[in-house]
Each structure stands twice: as structure tokens, then as C-alpha cells.
Image 1: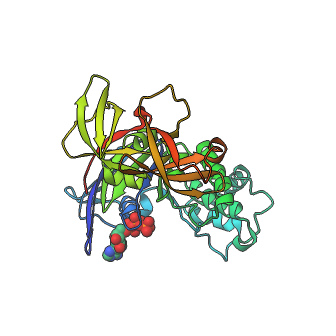
Image 2: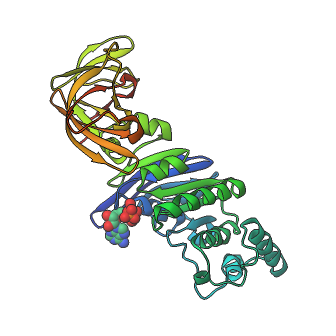
Length: 355
Ligand SMILES: Nc1ncnc2c1ncn2[C@@H]1O[C@H](COP(=O)(O)OP(=O)(O)OP(=O)(O)O)[C@@H](O)[C@H]1O
């Protein structure tokens, strides 16, 4: 287990973060400059916090009170960077063996051979990084890290430099290899919610040096606790709301002239809350016998993507965005600017207005 509680000020920026991570992949998600890399640097010992403590599998790596500060090279943490940071003048084999200088020579050769086989790099041992494909470079970088048998693995935006087609393939391949060959804690830094959702077990949302929410990825998506986490996780529809009625299982809400139901969740209610509804959860409605949470709306704009259409509507004074698979909205024609909108009550979440 990784237990982190730290404070670090650099110029005008202050990182103040407390969290724990267990085996599996924890995604650290946040906008540029929110402190993701700084968090990793403090844990790995490249930066020294001003105060706090960091403990990995029971071993104290840093503690300001008892003045413990284990040097970076002794923390046993592996890093895979965005551009893989392979040494261009070393071959695949030499790159992989690089971090093993302290191992006995015969053991080193044996481990490198084994790792080359495991990472499907056989036949490429004497190639230089410039002679490798993106996937081969990625596997070499991972091999170089995993051969040191780290307790903790950092992936710092490893896919952000790739274009989307190759990105999915490499992402899938890398995570498969990691799951098969590494049984520890993985911290993945990303600013992409889709990537975090595909790869991670847990997600931690960071903003301006603070971690705002940490939990299973499904909870982070379905129940953002405040406006900042809703925005960072890509929620397009955020409405001012007043709570008209509180029932056992549901709430009756009002946003401008729209009166709608929402499933009740286990969060304390207050007077200054917002309602969030994700664009892909809103539905076009054709069954006129069903009336609950179905509203007449006026289409304001339509943006056609390759596979989905984004529709902007005015719904009782609220501007809402719907993302609809193209195949499921053939009946929207240029001449018809009215639609019936269904707001599924289980997909409306209430949150604090923290901004
Ligand atoms: N050595 C430094 N001196 C002063 N400020 C710094 C220093 N290093 C980082 N910062 C500031 O700390 C903040 C957090 O930086 P960090 O690199 O952790 O961001 P990040 O979330 O990883 O961003 P990105 O996604 O762009 O990599 C930024 O505002 C940055 O400008």
C-alpha cells in the first residue's frame, strides 16, 4: 500500500495532497499544471516535500517529523515517460540492462534474456530505438523499468504523444503486459478522462494542487462531488437547481422552468447545489405514452461527428447538450426543430457548487 500525505510549495504553487493507493491502477486526472507530475516527483524523491510523510508497503520513504528521506535511487520506483526516454545510443538489450548495474553479471544476462522474451522483443536485441516501432519502443521502456522489480510503477502520460488509432492498440498492449508482469501499485498520470476510465481501477481528481475526489472509476463518473470534478470528468450539462420536494427514493427538482425527478443518492442536500447530467445519458424520446421526465425541446444547433451527433436544445429555458449515436437519430430532419427529450432520473446527480 502507498500512503501519501504531503505539502510542497514551489513559487506561487502549493501541492497539498493526501491519499492511499492499493494494488491496481490509480489514475491521477487533472488539467495541465494541477500538480500531477509534482505528486509523482515527491513520491519518487526527485522533489522533497516541505512537510508530510510517504510510506510504501510499510516502509517510510519520507517523514518530515522524524527526518527520514530515503534517496530516490533506493525507493524502488519504476517510471515510464511520455516519450519513453530510451537512450538513443544504446541498443534494446543495453537499454534494458541499464538499470541493473548492481546485479551480478551472469544474473544480469539471464534476466535480460528472460525479459526480452517476455516483452516479445526477441530478434530486436541489437536494434537502436530509432529502428523500433512505437510499440517496440514502449515495450523496451517497460522492460527496462520492470527488470528492476519496482514496488511502484509510474506511468506519466505514456500515450499522450500518440495519434488515436495507434494509441488504443498500444494502450491495450501496454496494460496487458503490465497486468501479466507486474503485481504492484501503478500510478498513471493523465489529463484524459476516457483514457483514465479505460485503464484505471480507481481515479483521483486533482485541481490546483489539491486532490478533490478519489474512488472507483464508476463512482467518479456517476457521482462527481462538485462542479470542478464534474467539469474535469467531462460533464457538459450543469444546471442551477432548487429542490422542490424530497421523497423517499427521489427528489423533485427545478431548473429555470424545468421540473424533473432525480433518483436520491447518499449525499447531504443544501440550498446551493447544482445538477449534472452527462450528454450521452440524455435520450430522444419517441414513446408518447411515457410521460415521466419527458420534455418538449427546441433544437438550437446540431453538430455532426463521424459516428455521433451532438444536439443543443433549449429545454424549458435550459440549454442542454445531447450526444446521440447517428444510427439512433435518423428522424431528426432539417425541417423539424422540435424533439422530445427524456432525462433518465437515475443519471441526474446533485453536487456542491465549489466555484
Ligand atoms: N521548479 C518549479 N518552480 C516553480 N514552480 C514549479 C516548478 N515545477 C513545477 N512548478 C509549478 O507547479 C505546478 C504543477 O506542476 P506539475 O508539473 O506537477 O503539473 P502537471 O499537473 O503535471 O501538468 P502537466 O499535465 O502540464 O504536465 C505548475 O503550476 C508548475 O508551473
